[in-house]
Each structure stands twice: as C-alpha cells, then as structure tokens.
Amino acid sequence: MNRDYLIFDIRRTLRNRRVLIFSMLMPIVLFLIFGITLPKDASEGGISAIAYVMVSMGMFGSMSAAMSSGGVIAAERDGGWNRTLRLTPLKPQAYVITKVLLSLLLAIPPLVVVFLAGLIFGHVHLSASQWITVALVSWLGALPFAAIGLVIGYVAKPDSVQPITGLATMLIAAFGGLWLPVSQMPSLMKHIAQLTPAYWTGQTSRSALTQSGLDTHALLVVLGWTVVLGMIGLRRFRADTARA
Image 1: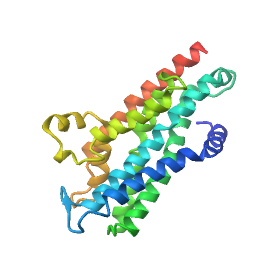
Image 2: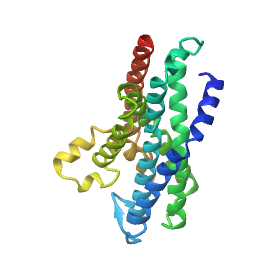
Image 3: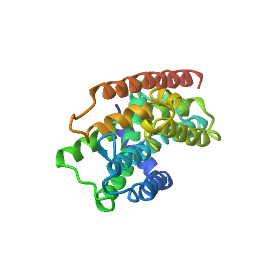
C-alpha cells in the first residue's frame, strides 16, 4: 500500500460530499420510517425488531458507500489516470488495496449515524461489548461491496456506472434480506438470498446481537466473497492497465 496515494485519494474523495450525504441520508430515513414505528416488544429471530432494522439499515448505508468507489474508478479510467499510474512505482495490488481502504472509510459515516439514531430515537439497548462487536463486524462487512465497486468500476463505462451501481445496490439489498427479513420471504427468494453477500453480512452483524454470539460460518462466507471479488477486481485492473 502507498500511504501518500491513499492520503491523496481520501482528500479527493472527501471533496465530493454528495456521496457521503446520500449514503447517510437514505438509510437513516428508512430506519426512522420502518424502525422506530415498530412496537417496542416486537422481535425477529430472537432479536429486538428495532435493533434488527438498525443493523440492516446500517449495512445498507455502508454497502452503498463502499460500492460508490466504482464511479471514481470509472472516471479515472476515462480520464487516462491508469496510463499515468503506469509511469509510477505504484503496483496493481497497492492500487486495489488503496481503493478498498477508501471504501471502508466511506462506510463509517452511514453506520455511525444509523447506530446513533437507533440509540437515541429507537432506544436500542445493547451492552458495550455488543455495540463494539456489531459496529466492527458491520464495518468489515462492507469489504465484499468494496470489491463489487472495483469490479463495476472496471466493467462499466463512466456514463453508466452510477445507474448500474444504484440498481446493483437495490437488488443486492432487497434479495439479501436487508429490507425484508429472509424468514418472511417466499421459499424461492430464501434460496436466492443465500447467494448474495448482503445475506451473509447481515447474518454476521445481527448474530452479534444474540446470546450465541458471532456466527463464524457467516463470517467465513463474507471473507470468501471478499477474496473472490477482490481477485476479480485485481484482474480487471491489470487487464485495463495493460490496454492503457
């Protein structure tokens, strides 16, 4: 990883405040609409329904922010940035890691605002260890979506990357059980849900709210998604740079 390039990328990304505002605004609005209107004693899978929605909306915001890196990558490709990178000592692995780290940084604000809303308005009561575990696991759960952003950025054209990213985000969230609990889905959709990274990230994050603790199987699946998608993104970067 190149620290100077990472700092440069962070400063450049923070100038585009619209991405940060949108990634925070939509999940918190959805939480306020669907979360705090639930009965206080409602539950889903042994978890407080309000806490369940809080985690789901936090994950939705973090995955949206992480996948937004695809737009930056597509713009860099269109502007000839890859050709410039070929003249520098920056290695392909360092570039991909930098983009992933940037996506993880973008995933923090949505989680923070949704979890604060859950604490203040939803009156979600968790122990300190539960808050820390849920926050950490939810944050790391953005990793596969950062990789998806990489892939989209190297497959889509600059003028189509935003609608593709938006549609992909909505479909992954809907079929992955972030908007509707998988237990309430039809049988076919339950099977489809398990083929999405959102299902497993949600399972991992929400398992921290249960008495049994973290779901290690779901965590391993999330890591598997991250590795596979990250390798695809790296291959696309190398192929695109070779053509540049």
